[in-house]
Length: 156
Image (cartoon, helix red, strand yellow):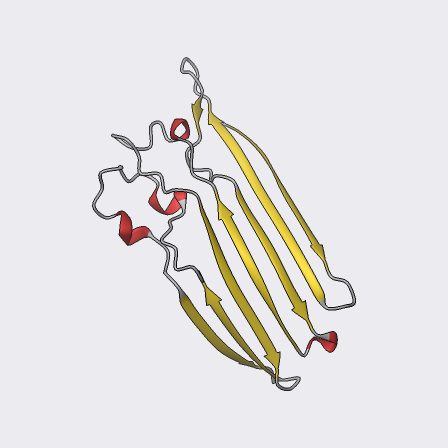
């Protein structure tokens, strides 16, 4: 087995409170068996990237961030041997999320997030790996549509 790839990330947080972050991950792999040609390692996720732009108030009393996440589509030649027929390969996607926080006191923090803002239907390759293109259950493996989360944390 041979796996190669790279990961990169960067963050920028100037004193003004505006900030940004970026992350990228790519990997490729082969399974090598004596007497057989090399085959693609199908368990590896396709290229993904994350870009976030946000603000944190001086003193970190409140802040928020908009995050874009991109996932590429798994190449067809990288799915050979995974399915008995043609594999279901979810399409590439970009989703947008927004998060915010407010420190009410040093002990109490309120958080909220709006996720998958564009209400995109999408699935990750490793969630559907092994399903055929004609499968009738692919929707069962998609991620949630637009959703909201609100939480409070209390430190004591």
